[in-house]
Image (cartoon, rainbow, N blue to C red; front, side, top):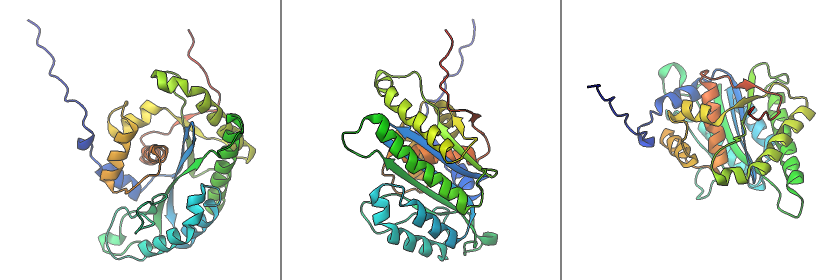
Length: 282
């Protein structure tokens, strides 16, 4: 009689090891900008290596004008918190700002290892920013809203590359989540809107001279990040909260952060793309 195979333990979000996440954030292999399109806007994650405090403050100053209003309104508090985190002697892997508010517009902070295992942070650290670019409300058709948001995103990416002196993306990976061309009836229903946003992002990145962005398939990054290719958005957030994040204003941001972590680990490079949707052959 054939022996039955041992049953696999069901995947449990609470059992996912978050230590590799902290290690990756401490020492990313490249600068990473990850983009997660949604029907109501765009989530973006920016993970940069070897950032000095002055660069971090400049980045916050410049890109906050491209993001939603709430980021600009909290600009001073965000920069103040970053400066405080940079000078702290308390050993932390992940520090987020602004602090002391019930509703943070987004988490932002320095991440990384301490100098020689001591208590003081290094003068150069990894910097992690994540935010949302929400489509403007109004009577404009979806394609116009998507194009406006994509323009703001492209300016954000261009300005970050300029500050990091990497206009040709020699040391930066820019990734977009691939479009899911199959799935539940609810996801298929919003696919036209997602396709409009996705195409607008490629168009606007190209318009500001940014080439070489890659695609990261949904199942690929979720499997690498959580061990389960069908993890839900709330599962991704749960893992990040366990790693030390405090709050995300949208699950598009948390997905973008998870994508950045996967790419920064060096396990996946993304797949090259021209932004063309290629349906499977029948």
